[in-house]
Length: 232
Image 1 (cartoon, one colour):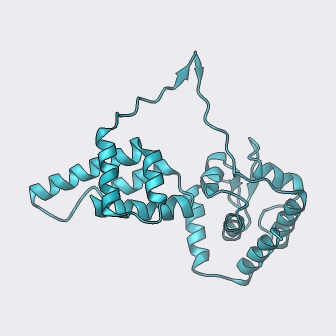
Image 2: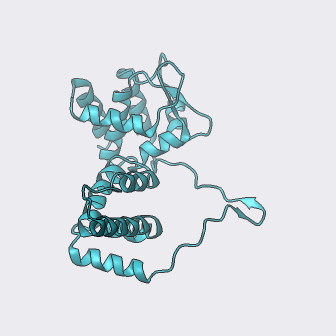
């Protein structure tokens, strides 16, 4: 069980905290990728199945608790046992309620968690135009304000996805936005492909970011330098 949660913690810190993967998608991916073991013994298979069931319960029913444990600097065997004991003694979550007083419960509004000054926004616009990040002759302040305020119905076509993800990654590195930016772009459908035929998904953003981290260019360094200078 400890080894299973260690893997879950490592993936959580990378996929959710670093890459911004949606938490529910991270849970599904982790559980589905650990369902089977290479063993034919019934005892081992039953034990693994039980541990997977516990791990899924922890990740889905004790989200707040498990995130605080995973975010801690150390995650020992003792803490793992403490986490499991709390899960064993806790009551299951009630089923999600879709309606309240005859009305749908609305999801919280999308947000990058940013609050740019006019000067910083001007710098972002300049960066976008300098490196031709989007399929417009010239990005304007209104475009970027609509994007970063998650304006409903707004979308813009991406000229070079790898350069766009570097812009957002640099903003995250300098604490201008929060780590969930990939999920926000996915849910809000703010970015379109270059030909305008589809919206950019969180999976595409994650893949593009992984690619550029392994192949740094002068453009990447240029974008990161511009964003870093916005903090000064």
